[in-house]
Image (tube, rainbow, N blue to C red; front, side):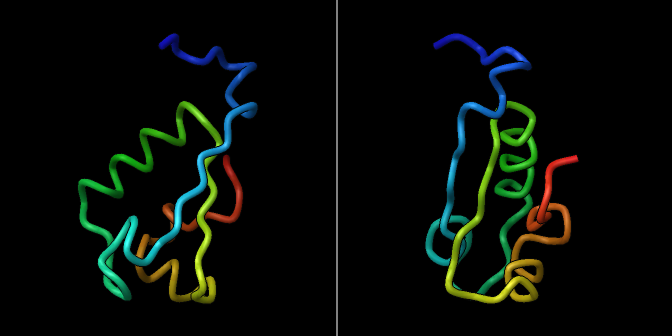
Length: 71
């Protein structure tokens, strides 16, 4: 698989559910998952979906992990 070029970064969207996928339901993500998500955001656009409100998602993924935009 080839590495996406910078202009292609936003052509791929990876969507993840929070509870039961990125975290144990209702718990905080571990450091390994947070690091993985940060690295993935360097390659593709990442979206987080879930049934919780944004405050709970930020609690689970941290402020950077639940950012509402990509810098």
